[in-house]
Image 1 (cartoon, rainbow, N blue to C red):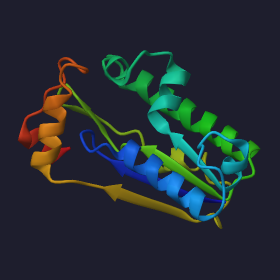
Image 2 (cartoon, rainbow, N blue to C red):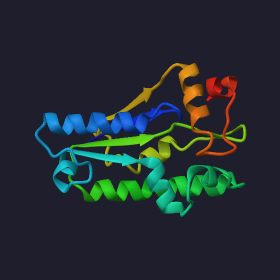
Image 3 (cartoon, helix red, strand yellow):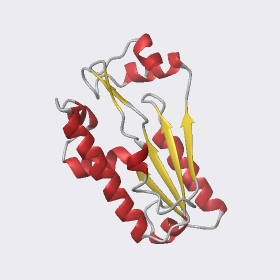
Length: 167
């Protein structure tokens, strides 16, 4: 097994791009393009970290999770999420794991880091497992425009250009 972490910031539509990339990879290697089929998961297991985190925590969405006042509580949920993902991929026999996540969350001018190297150990069975981290980025103005279009879906999440740049 190898692990590839695909990271990027909000406003980039990274998940859609990564899901399409995964489908194309499956097709190229003669697997069904359905990301959830057991046959496809033998070759590539696509995992969206935020979906798993919400499942572990029970929050309805990421802004609700990030609004928790306690950094300790958020960190504990993140650690439990890595443990759960690790349990899932260790029970599967898959060649490639694609983990779709953000390297940091930004809410109310506060950063919350979901990826700590200690947590990554939950996903990597041994020192011989290849791990790659790929960061997908876009132009800051494009991201800003995309986030502005989504403000109705995520109220109170508007970001200024300088906040996006620091993120």
